[in-house]
Every structure is written in structure tokens, then in C-alpha cells.
Length: 294
Image (tube, rainbow, N blue to C red):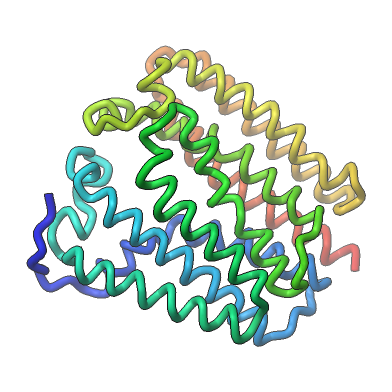
């Protein structure tokens, strides 16, 4: 358990509360939505303020996640050194920090972009920071399938920031991340299954077993390969994206098959790390394809 007395928390501790690793993928997918929606010519103030505003609200929800999960984090090896658990930052300081991030991000979105972007981003903040973290995570072994919607929203938010509309093409990008999320997190959950058991979090490998989880990782990877080709099938991207998505998907399938056949589960973390590279490279290929097609 954490303490309300702060142990001289530094800026690095506050940065850790915002989950910068997650923010990096958010940046890539959000920028992709912004640039594709504007044919690579978004108004500079909208681009910068929109990206910062969306990121600040995402960071604010991450801090809320830390606040709610502090007792849980203290039971898990992976999260036992987080700033709130160690007492480097108090609960009160974290709440103030989260509110400040939310207010500043909201100002940027409302002043420089449009109300639609703020509404969608705020709803995402509420869904992840409160509904998923407090309730959904503990209700079902499919928690990450449902909760993944929050993490899938950045390309749509970036798109609406520059277009003030919800475009079907943007929803395809959301769908890709939504389908990508389960095999990404289930790979980590297999590796950290004992942590989740200890903390009482009903992740899929805890509730249904590791073999069942491996089957679902494989099935979702095949589904992801199909979904990732939808943007090409509707004419959103061209051959560069098609080749990239096909190759990246086949490599992902290779990792998923290796994990499925691995009785010692040593391939779980390599699969997890590749999934991060997969998403980053897939969205980068979208940008390259779109830029060359201008």
C-alpha cells in the first residue's frame, strides 16, 4: 500500500504516472489519423494543440488508473515499483496532477480544435479511467477485449481534430487497434499469469487457462490479418500498405504459432514485444503509402 506522505517525487515519477510507453503508440496512431484526414496539410495550430490535448487527456486517465490500482499494483511484481505504490507521490498529488492534465488538455481541444473531438476524448477518458479501471477489469475474462476500445480511439480522435467529423475510414483504423489489443495484452498476461492470480484480476489465462489463451491469441491474430487488409479493400491505401500489412501480419502469425506450440511459454514476451513493433510499423506504412499517393 502507498502512503499519503510523498517521498520527494520527481518529474520522472510524474511522467511515469502518464504511462509514456502507451503514449508513444498513441502519438503514432493519432498523428496518422490527423495527417491522412488532412492530406498531410493540417493547420499547424490544430495539429500541435490537438495532439497535445488528446495526449494530455490520455495521460490524465492513466493517472486515474494508477490511483485506482494502487492496492492492486502493490501485489504484482510488474507494478510494485510504481510511484504511488512506493509513496514517491501521494494520492492527493496524483489527483491534482490528473485534474491539471485534464483541464489543460480540454482547453487545448476546445479552443484550437472542435467540441466533437473534446467530447469523444472526454468519453474515452471516462471509459478507461473510471469504467474500465474500476469495474470492467474485474467483471469478465474478456476485460481487455472491451477495455481495448479506449486504446483504439486515438486515430479517430486525431481524424476528428482536423476534420470535425467521424469518417468511416477512421473507424477502420479504430477496428485494427481494437482487434490488435487482445493478442498484445494476452501475451503479456501469459508471462505474468502468477501476478494476475495473486492480484485477483480475471485475465483470460487466469480464468480459462494458458492453452485456451494461446488459442485465442492465434485466432485474433488471424482476424487481425484480415481486418488490417480492409483499408486496402476500400481504396483507402495502395500497394505499399498492402505489402506491408501482409508481411507484418505473417510475421505476427509466425510469433503466435510459435507461442501456441511453446509448452514453456518462453515465447510470450517476444510475441508481446513484436506486437508493439507491428502496430507502429503498420501505421507508419499507412503514412508512407498516403504520402506517396498524394
